[in-house]
Length: 244
Length: 244
DNA sequence: CGAGCCTTTGAGCTTTATCAATGTCGGTGG
DNA sequence: CCACCGACATTGATAAAGCTCAAAGGCTCG
Image (cartoon, rainbow over all chains, first blue to last red; front, side, top):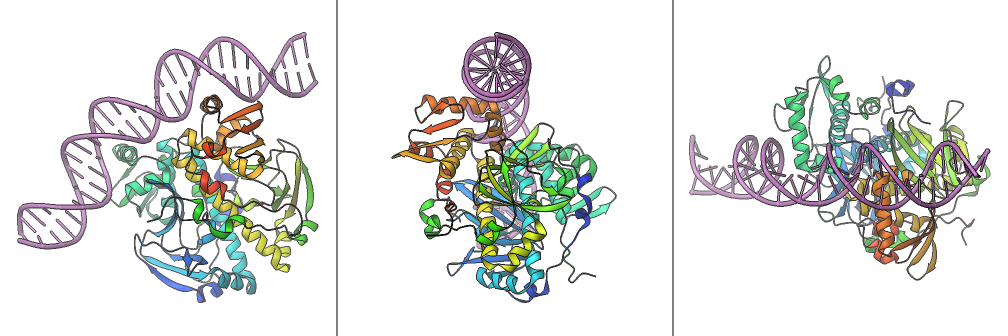
């Protein structure tokens, strides 16, 4: 019935952007993040909301001792409500990079949304956007083999935080360690390392240093994973202040 | 840092319930569903919202030819916005059972929410609840072995649509075929069949007929999967009309 | 009653996890 | 400045989990 995911059909939403409404930016507590810093999901027992201003965050779940799954990566413009995590411990929100995050108590945030239709629309849009990304991630983890999964991850990062170097080439920082990447992809860290080595030896990418990835042939890399197309068509936020 | 998921810490939210606000129930188009029926995600090119009144739905993604992943099962009280799916084809919303679903155009739905704070709160709550369930599903698919995954699925169904038979025993209808279950769990249908046979031979469950599952020892079954605890603590909707 | 689809089960094989050894990077203190 | 330490990464050998393919039995619906 449904055809495979393809970006050609993404339509006008592919180049669509939105800007964080001023009402949201003005309120909330500005939190400076450092790599590895955990962001507590409750504030004095109350639900919270985070808006990513400039950073990369990881939401993950600990399913059993030594079994963790990365659920979603959050980029600038993304919104995280603590109720998105299952109740109980086991849910983690971690900053992967230095940056800035806005934090709200949920009830205060809800009042802001009630008072401001733009903020409301922004929140709903952000939630939908992340939900779609997470669905792709789930499909990748459930259906793709290890190479396809890793490539999907690299394409996601290249799309979200990559800097174009030249035609078909992109550079980005890997904000996760190997084992964190493995947790995100539902793979073993050793297996992951092997696959990265292979991609390197095939000349698809190189690593100036451990945490920097230089994609030497983006189209060829993307072709290795069926999830690439939809990941690349995912819109990014406009983080340059009010819309021009 | 985070301890494994455990229901003991779920707190008061475990027995929390909410009822579909009348404003939402009164508007929207009532759609009668039949098993296998696809619910189109766009209505004349416009975004839609579905509210499950009485049925079980499956949201799934086609990642490539013959590679499909079940993303979320939707139960009574759940809400699905078409923007939760990635753009493009490849996203499917299918009714698994006969039942009733309310359908809205997104802009009309958004106006309803704007005009009615209860409806708004309901929507936000439903989205958060489903997001949490989906996170657990992703963690299960990414980290658990095939038995643990299948058990997690059975526990999910037992919790959501199961009817208690006697102490520790539950009966429910399997609204999916074997291959659909396999797609949901990221497993091969053959492997799945083997595991079900083993669970049957171990006396944990029996199948009066192909689509009926009789769990003979729920605690013993649940003990086989680390995801059971959090799935069982997930709140169900109150589908019996206004709150008593 | 027959056709087609779904399910079960076995045999063999592929992929990925596990275990273990070695290497690299970054920081710290002598 | 260098030696050492711990965390992280790579790589090889091996094992196991789950997939593929194939055959046979059941169910459903015309």
